[in-house]
Length: 219
Length: 157
Image 1 (spheres, rainbow over the protein chains, first blue to last red):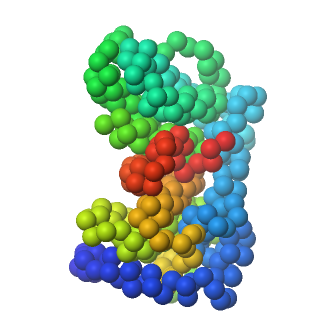
Image 2: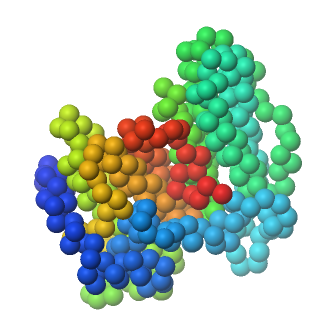
């Protein structure tokens, strides 16, 4: 696309030039509208992305919108999730899951359990990795908790498996082993994500992205 | 909407389109923001910045085509945006890049939440993953530990 290429070639310089004029965007009616509109239904969609990003502004709209029921389905544990279960609320197709999706969610829980187990095994086999792996392991466990909460009827007590392969004792090899497993899990969650809708799709996509990040760090 | 563009309320993909508009807005911001990032980094770091900006230009073009194909008027970029903090050093620049990527991630998780079309969710999960990969690199440069997040684009709790 010629236009796009032209902009790409000059992109950084173009934006540098804009950056020198950025104070124009910090004051005046437009900026005021931007801030005031961050929570309103009539906010400018062209600016909401930035208000979402701005650390100086109050809680972003994205955080508020994610409190909707669809995300609660993915984030809250317990009876509320069981209640919607396979049948869903009448007329609420976003929250409903089919029996096949229930099975698939359970499979994703198993995948994530294997990631959590793999971190434990890696640290056990190569204790010198503990310092670097502990924060990542905690993230994987948090992901598992949310995934379990989003899986209707998941017992949450199934023993995890890492395909029966023990973690290597050599730290470098253990890291590579873990990286491979985390990357595979990320790909599995990403592949499953489009099969769902609403909060479950958002959750699976987010977990997949988080594991992709871990895979990079483990390299 | 003028010129025969579709009214959002009349569209079966209205919520999805609105979320895509937010993702497009985030892409506009990122394209602008990476200019600020690039200006604050030494020349040897510019390739990375350009790569990030190119990713958002591609994403923007894809979103423009997608929305236009649905007869939805895409949101335009703005001449300037409010920086969340002064960008005076390389670390500030990396922190701004993290902010840009996390904003994009938030937009794309919302797309995943709202999408009715499978193809849109496929686009969303790919875009979200790419944003988090870039974010991890920038968090490392910004000195943040750990550089990963459990739930990119979602509230932590």
